[in-house]
Length: 196
Image 1 (spheres, helix red, strand yellow):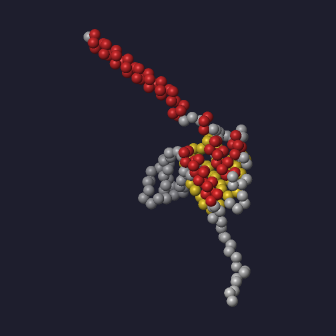
Image 2 (image 1 turned 45 degrees about the vertical axis):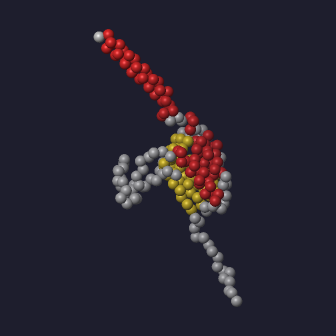
Image 3 (image 1 turned 30 degrees about the vertical axis):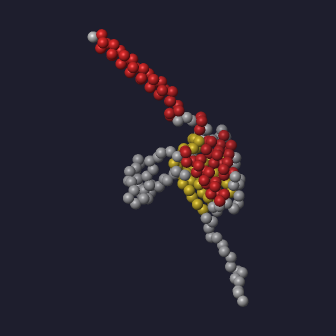
């Protein structure tokens, strides 16, 4: 005879949560809208930016939001699984609660959006033994290790051209005038030398 212990149940003490660093990012409104749309596929969307709250990806078009956002938190859950994205000056992470194939797919799609928006930042990790000891600002024992950050611009990418895109025509005109000046100077120099 086999005895069954019917009084014993397995209880999870803590649900598994995964944190994924996104790196140092520069994100625009269209990037934030894409991330919000992906999260909304899981369940009801919640967006927080300071005192402002939204629940739709297009809420980033709100005139109540400043052009430079201090930080954004977006979460979506269906009651069982959930994904959150925290974007701040010293943090850019995705938090996945109860990882599943769906949440892994959401994470992967968010990483595809943010990867081209990574910016070059001199990031120094002080928790690595034998690592570099150079810093721009004074270091103390309480200095946090910043593995990721987000610069958030609440405007569409197409409205915010890069330095090269803004000044390309000036550089081309300057280069053409430089070439014309060199050729003209060479011709005049040759002509003066042949006369004398």
